Length: 201
Image (cartoon, rainbow, N blue to C red; front, side):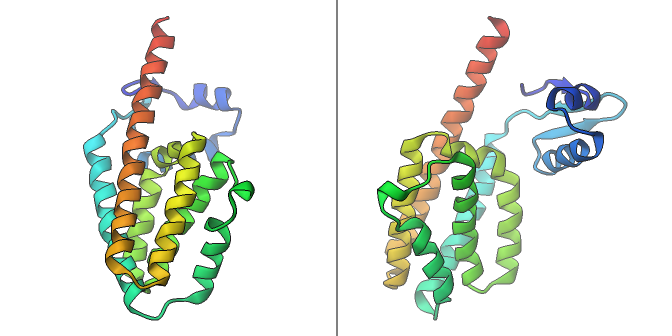
């Protein structure tokens, strides 16, 4: 729970891993702002900062809108878009509903758009943001209706880019990311509420 203190020793027993990979994971969580180190005590779960998440989502939207504009107005890497079409324009009967797989594929979709635009600095910053919001972002794929929406919305974005329709592609992309942010917030708050009930029950 937010504010809760944890020790590496107890955590290692719970997840049954050695100290080195555990410490690496904790450091990654610290980098993302999800926990902080308390000298001689252990680690503390950081309070959820939705304002900070909103800032990162907003920055991510700006980067991706810029990438989409570039992709609509210049020659595109056809192989990247062939790969994206193969994944996201697949028939409904062949869609994957594996939460982990879809989380990875979703990240690859968005990073591919930025990569295809050819701006290395934007890609670097976008990758850093992706890492920092990864934990909460993947909650969006714990529900099958959100997975179906992701397939549909990604497909529409791809088609708009390939047709060179800048305004439509940007509108679709922005709406897609903002809806995902809303869903992630609702899921996160719901999970916290359930956890508090279990702790007091």
